[in-house]
Length: 106
Image 1: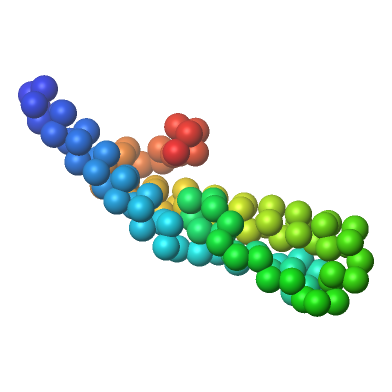
Image 2 (image 1 turned 180 degrees about the vertical axis):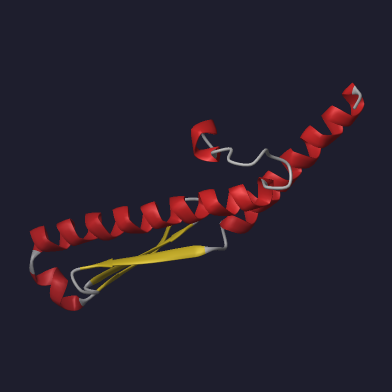
């Protein structure tokens, strides 16, 4: 394999990962807290897309704040894990087996 082939492969990997990241903005994970009193949806790029609150939760400010934080953290964790899986799947044709993209900061 010559240097031109290597650079071509790197470019192909970059394009694949960029396309995957773009698709991830349209892929969602949802989490709830308080038995569904707070529901948060995040995309796989770890952006909060939607927050739904049961009107009952608004009667107790401290509880609402705690439930929102909990649901947001759960949704972001789910989105991060699934996003990592999507990137690993996209890169699987290029990366040696067992390579942990999370350790690469991806």
